[in-house]
Image (cartoon, rainbow, N blue to C red; front, top):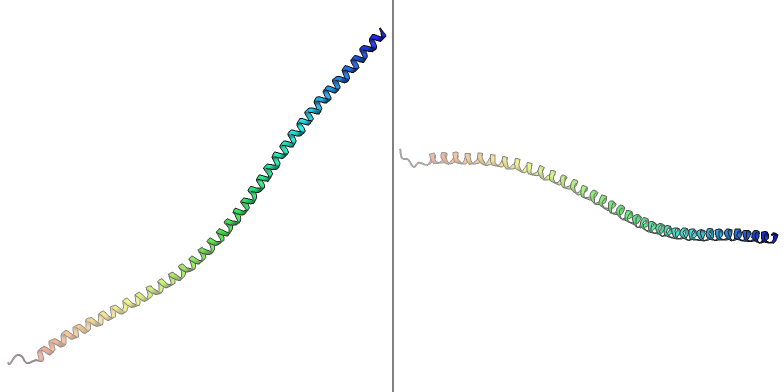
Length: 135
């Protein structure tokens, strides 16, 4: 019976060790799977970071282009503002010149009216001087 008990105890011990080995093997395989899953996730995240970095560079480039474009528009706007100011000054000078010319035309028209009236008066007076009538 001691022999049977020793064999049984050995079998139980071997079964126990086999169970521990199977459990350890299962844990090792699950750890390997988790490791490779984590490596895949890490690689995916590296690709995302690379993609985001590329997008960031593109956005920075676009931002610089827009800043340059905005600066050009501001300069163009300033130039247009200066041209507008000069045009307004020129228009004011032209308006002043038109006002002076209009006043001069009115004065000349008035003088012309006076001269026409004097001319008519002189003709009448000259017609009275001509002795066409023998009386």
